[in-house]
Length: 241
Image (cartoon, rainbow, N blue to C red):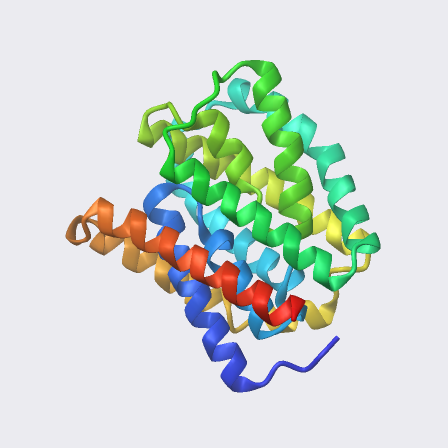
């Protein structure tokens, strides 16, 4: 565990603020935006501290969209996420830092691909279970568990996607937090690192709720994707060279 300096925490807080704004706007994206930046600033910030911040965000959005939640739809995904979370902890234990960076990069670019292309799978129980399992693997090891579920739900109405992703992420992030803690990847030191980041994420969430009508969807959509791509490139250059 490393001590994170104040300047690094300020930059990390800005990344969480931006990620929270994006997630509130489109239903997912906080980890896609924040994870590569936090990893670049200090690998100790991923996945533990970021997972705690993500949990705070998920609880807020889960409560906001609770009326649109479809538990029967989400049940297969949530059940399949349990073994997926276990696989994610195993990856953290066996992968070196460089390979974890590559895994994060692949995960993020999958999310970018889902948003750029009109890719959608039917929301069958099998596909929901597969999405939940992959979300568990990717979310626990990298904090980026959104792309598999978005891929399955991409063709649904935007309000339905927001509500069900919010509900899924509440339960799934709790699973990941428990898995990380049991595997020794979420300690008191990680919690202390997360403390200054959570208020920034909540501020981003609040600002998104009150200003989304002022921001055009294409600007938000392509701007966030461009930021993700640049962050991935920077992270890989810093880690693999």
